[in-house]
Image (cartoon, rainbow, N blue to C red; front, side, top):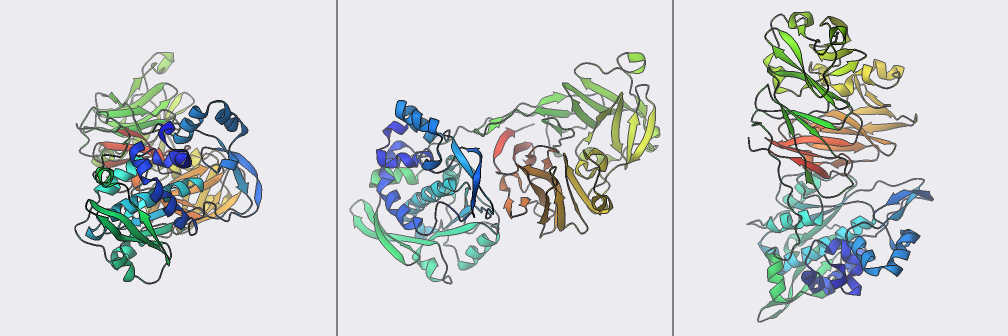
Length: 565
């Protein structure tokens, strides 16, 4: 949005209104201000976070009094540039720290999209979503939208430019029921603050509760409704609606500013059997399988600064045989593939030195790995195994053991390899003690369940109650309260979090010591997602041939890889 076209009264709203055309933003102005006054008494901008404890760094959101002095100098010298940066979320704020921070749940708007809320009701909902989005951003949290009648846990997330079109398209043929409200609330995290945007008819059928906003037409003209009666927790106000012409365009989606859709880069092969993405080393390289066992897809993920979702290119590698393991070391990608009764290396980049320092080597007989009957077919339906360098040798976890492959092809048993959860035999890097950067604490070494990331380790006796020790030695306790596998361990600053995936619906959650966030953008896929061993990155094949990569803390999608092959 061109912020210079906004009136001064709407300048503080520029970031939220950037999802709309300037004309609709101006037309909604009176409704926004009146609604913001009503909501403000029940949704404060700041939580009670305890005693202040200095500054914790910089942030791109916050109150005006937290802006850096340099930003105020910019506003004085170049006001237009200041407004542009405000609209694009580029202004820097001081981020305060608190001694006893309270959990920061999301603001969750549960919306009624049935016939009773058609027309004027949807316009009030649009204004309410803008108001709640602005307040969520000021509190350092996010707005999510749940449509009453959808399955529990299904939420619209992301930027407003992504959420609003999806909300508008979510029209339901029947009005929701109190049971739909209960189902929607069950899908929220414990710390979320739920707002119900509905009709007076449904509100009257519900038990007394807070943060219920209802609307119904109050005054009419020949062209349609001009005012609505809005009720919120006992308060009532008559608010004006935009002019009929622009209101109709808004309800048809013509006044939304949409982000350009990221182009889906074609993967080089059909992924009908599942791409099963994997991070096999510490590099920012995502590996995936193609339709055939001989196809390996490698994606080098660029660093992101929080911008819009971008498409990334997958490079296709075609070794002469089925791929068993792969890993990136520096600029070199090394894979092992099957050729007749041997494992043979495939190298993209500078050749690796074999016997006598000459290129080649590292070719080993399958029988040396205890695989006289060959490799099981299911190995090629799982993510590619990691392939690491150990001095001059290659290290491979296969068939429950670690194997060291020398340049001359000699294979040596190098010890037991970590399996998956509950005795599953497939390899799991996060459970591998030898890849932990420090000596395991004695209690972790004895525990039945173990995950680690860098110098942080977590362990549990039952898979539900976890002890976590970060690299600073600080200890935390995290509880997993559902039938889910822990698939990764990540950090936000120094605070650890477990990444879990339910076994039935494949719901992915970010479980912190102080709360839980459901990562819906990475849930419900064809298989459990892949979590990076050191970075807060998660990759999921949400449907066959489509992989999304994003942030485990915010749940935001950074990169998209698509395929029609």
